Length: 132
Image (cartoon, rainbow, N blue to C red; front, side, top):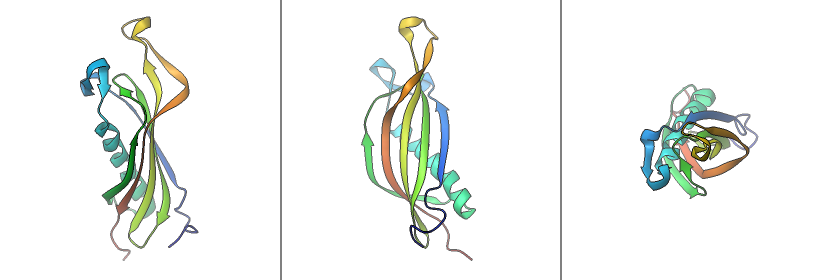
């Protein structure tokens, strides 16, 4: 398998509202582990699409917490296959804030951001069962 594999470049995207029950710090900040959980979810769909199996997350080789995630945000999480091995798949992840609450405009006010905010990026490896 190689970069010529048609699975390389496959991108899966999920969107998720961050509930206030996940606020962990002052200012309604959400811990970075929230994004890692979402990366696991989107990686599962990647494995199902590429290999017909949920697969297992093996490791992260890089995680970067770039900007804050807050309760009330809408996150867009993408996973893109970058490498296909015999049983392993390299995946690049990105979590972007695409909507954000605006409490300065009212308790339930929010807006769609003109430019999404990149909150977390990562590179990881998943493994799938050997082909039959």
